[in-house]
Image (cartoon, rainbow, N blue to C red; front, side, top):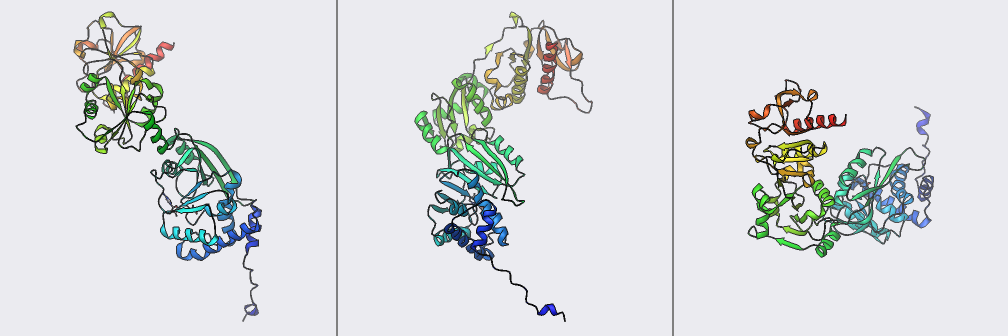
Length: 490
Ligand SMILES: C[S@@+](CC[C@H](N)C(=O)[O-])C[C@H]1O[C@@H](n2cnc3c(N)ncnc32)[C@H](O)[C@@H]1O
């Protein structure tokens, strides 16, 4: 028998508050003895409850101090903590409880959905005798509207999801503090893209926890717009409000008529959908905005919508009927520019006039967008064309229809035969070899029936692989317009 087996192993001394203090100091955190004592009590409660509640997978004492407590406290050393502060998805109280202990003046609310954790948090707060900290034991959702100066969150979800979730509860200028690992660049980019109108990146700081190899990144966004509750109140003071609950309401009936070209022509109005289009139109054509239309009072108009625009708050089912693109975000009622008649007898202006025959509103919107992009400023809608302010056309145009120079022309069959038409046709001259006249009308092929014979005299084609039968007509028009625009630059 090995003699060693009789020897007692040297007992490792159980760690105590002094060890906690020493490790925290090595991470650059100096707490007074009473604060260390509170953190020690928290540590013991966490350890006791962990086997039953599964609060953390970190068990070694040193790791718990570094990766849980020091990690939780460091954001307060690196930035001034906003107060009151919501710790979203606090779990067992991280970072909220160590932060409260280290920065007792900060008011903190711990948000946690799991009820056994909620009980643990409440008992911990009471047992440690902490004040200025409480638990919100429900899910934080966009409709949560208690107001905070800031949110902090650790190990919960992607940043864009959190920014969406906390939009109701952070004041203008409030901070959203994300405690992340080093590789979060994609998350930051996604959040910036999705929330460019409401949050700005204020800080992105890489650091390590003391002298350990644990790399961390503190990412802070600042809220730039007003939260919905404030916007609702401001909007109610600023705009004329009309609550519409019945399909028999005359304003609603008029709005419904705008779903047809006839209604749009008669009322000279259109419905715009899509958050980006609407934002752009409000910014660029504020005088044309007549009403903000939402399916609930929780979607107030943005602050820069002119006060002359009304706010129509529709019952959800009435709103859904108008929201033909199914965007579920509010619509904008706009006054549309008068489409003046086109008189071909007066001759064509220099450059390219685009004739639009498309019956598909998306092609109409797309070709108008390309025409303006490549400098063909005169656009003639032939009688066959879908209405350029059809919701799909507005969306495909990227909002360009609002300021394009649109004219109303005859049916394609009634175009003057002496018009210098350059038609787009599969059998025409390859577009790169074609000498565009000084002044001409570009006629892209109509879907289905194609071009009338008489107009094929001067035809250009887009060379392409025989594997594809034909290009989308608006795409072909865009290529021809681009080619023409390049010949003008020579
Ligand atoms: C992975 S744990 C992280 C806990 C803690 N922040 C940490 O760093 O140790 C995420 C916690 O967020 C909670 N949670 C998730 N979504 C939430 C929401 N919408 N509102 C409140 N709590 C939420 C979960 O119940 C869970 O306890």
